[in-house]
Image 1 (tube, rainbow, N blue to C red):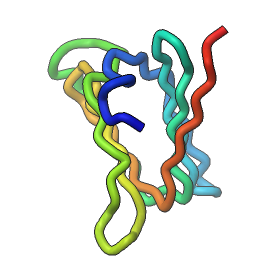
Image 2: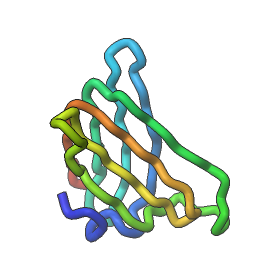
Image 3: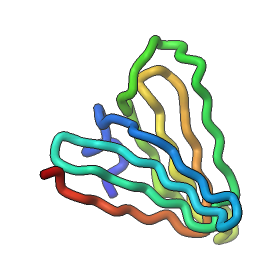
Image 4: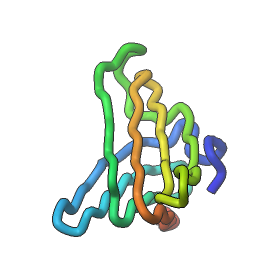
Length: 101
């Protein structure tokens, strides 16, 4: 997964969490595909929505997935064009891409 290339200006669709399973899904739409980033056995999900740069549904930059210390999992971070951030840490982080029709 390229950190910010294909996700810069992508639309953030939604965030879904399954508390019992510990799984989190972040969904994005680019010009050509819908992308789901899944955190399996998530240990952290932080997000702000204070809109310091104004309203937007678009991604500015993505970092990760990057390895956490001591092999404890992975971190995926999204900076929105609002200036807010989403941070997901999980045992595994996967990507699913579905072309738009």
